[in-house]
Length: 139
Image 1: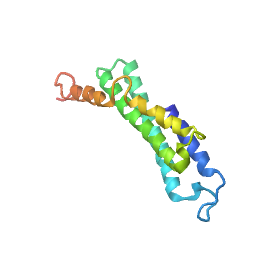
Image 2: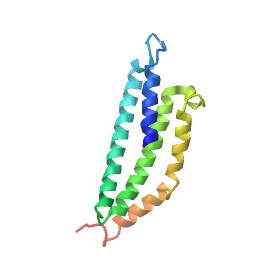
Image 3: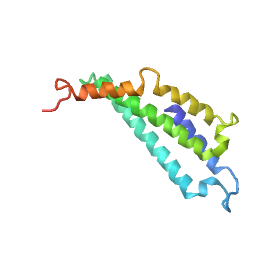
């Protein structure tokens, strides 16, 4: 999530840079950019909460800690990549240039969806827990 946080910060800075576009002093004056930045911030916050919840369940030795950690790994790595990718979009074509670090963050975040068990495997871990009558706590 550190990369996602940094990409959000970089997108905000870029949107506030003085650059007259269609009669507006910067990109941050456009409602679409404002909405996207707000959505990126909300998605980042939700991801942090999900990760903290899973960490708490792990620390507390919750019966379903593995399932919650798998959920967090999948959703947080997907969201982290998505946040970086959408932040890059605010830069337009410049986002792909090595002049801006955001292109590296997008590239680097993609691997987290694969390492330590692919996100598809995380779905398998979650579904096995939910579909096992011994583990799912459904009465």
